[in-house]
Length: 135
Image (tube, rainbow, N blue to C red; front, top):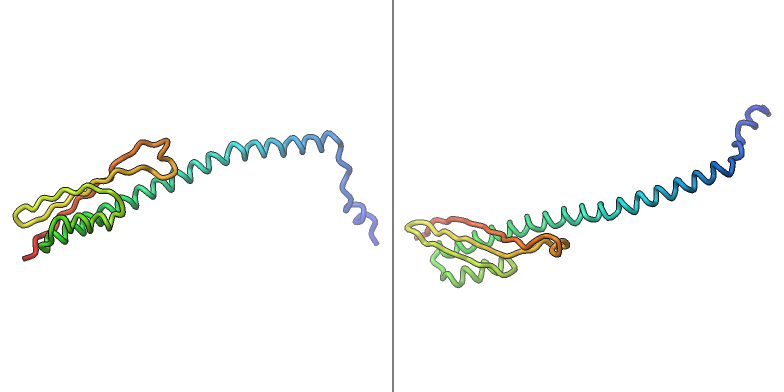
């Protein structure tokens, strides 16, 4: 057996100073993670809140389309408002204008950002659509 090879497998003994430096470095890494973790959680909350606002906007647009189609077909405005509220899934305010050949519907809803509603102010989601009367 080759003696030089066997000698290279052994690591030199580490001094107490080196061990203490490694221990202090591990503590600084823990402190960095302690600062970084809340920032990551806040970023995730902002992303989820923004996507929730986008989804709410899409629901408002669909509610306006449903109400406009129903009114254009000749259904009662109260039935259309009830259907739009059901589609939106919350409290909404609907305004309609049945001009000559078009039906215009506007949906307005108060909203807050989930997870961050205590920090960010309440806002309103608005959607507007136009449909042609069906005879």
